[in-house]
Image (cartoon, rainbow, N blue to C red; front, top):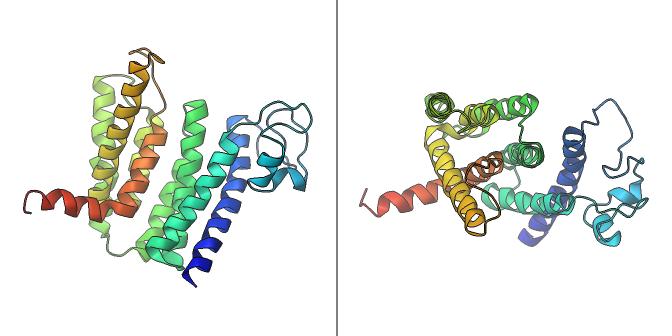
Length: 252
């Protein structure tokens, strides 16, 4: 029975994130949301149903546009597979219930944030508002995080990030600061602090690898949003275990 539930979660996650791919395309390529027909980001032709089968369409077309045979973004299949992983994790941690649905919705928004920021180096305000709305909704389904903890979570990371950016212009983007303020509602202060720590750790390792490989210069900036989103996911799903392990090392 569990295997069927997990399989259903994976399939549902892939399908939802396949749809999110089209949302990301519209934001990245400035297509707008007024057009009803979904267009290919490579050549602009209207996509048919056969072009939008999750995972399979990308594999069958060998990752190329059907009209011009140009390469479609590899992000399409990566995000769909990520959706399957997120769906599985949410059901694995919370089971099939509204808690899992709220968590899945929150991570879906973060996925859009991560890929849009990666390709444009911007985080749209609309996505920040959506994260904040889901964070407010989570108050009903995650009562173990108190209102006070959530209130502190709004400022405990975003305010220091803003102060550092004022002192050292360009250290963090405005979108990063607003995202952490919005996510503080969802995470509370403990998980917010853990999220920024994980983001800085992962971002530092990534930038160190790029510098060692001489892929970037020391002055070159990269998108920090994806690392924030990954840090938030890790903190929310495994934060209690990580904090217990860490403080247990000191006998606390």
